[in-house]
Every structure is written in structure tokens, then in C-alpha cells.
Length: 60
Image (cartoon, rainbow, N blue to C red):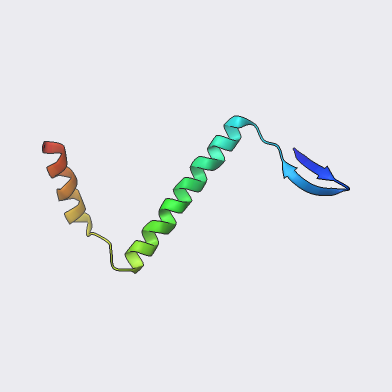
């Protein structure tokens, strides 16, 4: 629902469930953006190395 004031949209009213879904999507998009920036900066870890790190941590 769009709330108006003097004929102009000023706010949007959404249900709690939809708001939570929007927040989750936004967090995912922010994570993707941050990850892409890290890769561009050369901070990425090759897949095989990341897999080995995770498996070592799981064994501990």
C-alpha cells in the first residue's frame, strides 16, 4: 500500500512477512556485492583451497 500526502507517494506499507523477505534479499545482494569487490581486489581464495580449509575446520 502506498501512502500519499497531497497526491505524492511518501511511504509504503508492506506486511511483516514481505518486509522480512525483502531484507533477506537485500542482505544477499550486499554479500554478493562485497564478495565481488573482494575478488576484484585480489582477496579471493581458490575453490580447492577454500574447500580444504572448510574440511579441516569440520574435522577439528
